[in-house]
Length: 200
Image 1: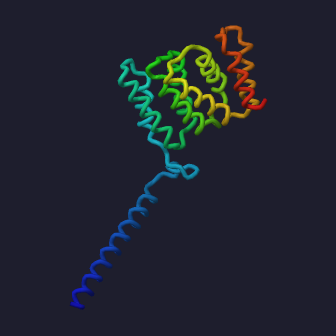
Image 2: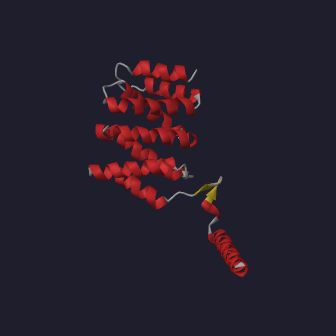
């Protein structure tokens, strides 16, 4: 009986040792084959093909494909992967189109995306702030669906709490001074709220 127990313990020990060696070999092989660019600031590189497919879906003429694209984009942004500047610009371009079109069926998800996008990548979005504030404040000054109110407020809060107050003030002033823009009645009040909360 004692001999059987010893053989069992020996077998278990060999199995554990084998599993450990396999794991170490897998880690070593990954380290040898992975590109240095696969890591940036300790964050794994994102799946560029997945982002390309998501952005393509977001601009599809098919509503279901567009919904799927938005959901995929939201999940990619939630992963907080390190996205290069040229792809951040592509995301901004797609969001510009979605914000301008104003499809009410999609707007709640678009606002959720903006909330995550701004919170995670605001350091790379300074040039986009003027357009973003224009669209968000415009939507806050017109009638919107009740289901969009909270996501819109969350997106505005993300802007207020992540961008530097002076950048917000400059962006708002440029929009107010732009003769092409014709803001809705509540626009000025919305601007004051953003600036006030930014403590400019």
